[in-house]
Length: 135
Image (cartoon, rainbow, N blue to C red; front, side, top):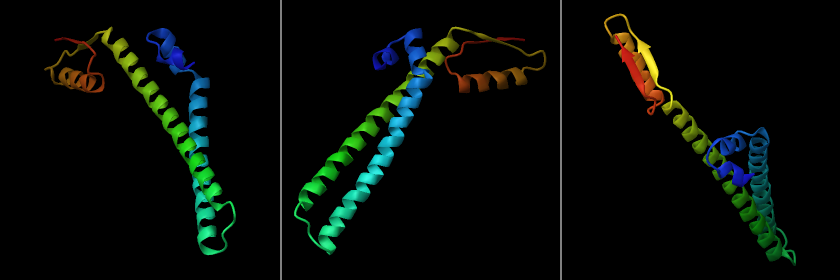
């Protein structure tokens, strides 16, 4: 699915807008955030337990396991967050390309101030939109 989402054109556009893909990405982001919080709490617990109360035999192993899980969840969340951001950028580029293909005609029978305001707003929202004005 990742290869389809990175493809250009309609196939990639449909893959990026897929509900299944978005649910997957957001679910993995949620799980990674919860995993980071739980692992960090476990790491803090093991470190404080070893420093304050008693030192278990496998304290170093427990701390290293928690650090390993912490990096795993951070990496998982970072990768899927970047993919979600990339999907958004590619979708916005595809929408801008579609906007550039269809010019907009603005009619202003008055003094031209309304038409100029509409054209300025359109250019601000969609800079690649080719406006045509008629007075």
